[in-house]
Image 1 (cartoon, rainbow, N blue to C red):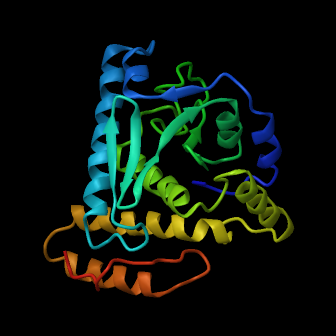
Image 2 (spheres, one colour):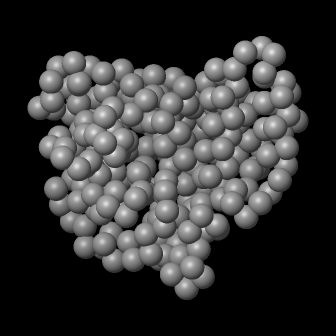
Length: 240
């Protein structure tokens, strides 16, 4: 989950039944929003996937296995050596509830669920993947980080990915009072931090990059309770 922990979300997940929009390029093109908003949303999503793949091909990837995000007419999927995992984006009332408690998205076995932003009308565009809390379009790098965070949940099947995993997730959240330090969030947070370092490095000047790389290695080596990096690449990372 991107954000804080919703302690009783398991019950809400069971009650969620209908009114789901599966967000795809086609649903964006057919949305009621202005043509320029539709085009900008699709462009931001496309660029986000490109950024995610640039990160996945970089030495900053320490937690997710070798992989790439595929993007087509049906949306996203994660291509791994062992096969293909869906990264579908669903927007429904449960996603609205998630947003209401300060979250952006929550993992599912099919990908993620997001909610309609306050004041929005179109679930394909004005959802929490593509829009901030103020309803303004989210930048592509923010979209990429959410995608990678939730993809980590799906790959490692940690969090609310499947019924039993979801039950264990909320039991730990409720009875151990864990939020940021939740055991199922450590790898996804690690991926988020890795991407943040990648994004800073990408925009930094040549003179700044060595220091950023050293800071990244120090962070990745510090296995705190907030994030757990690994299993790591096949070989020791080299400076990009």
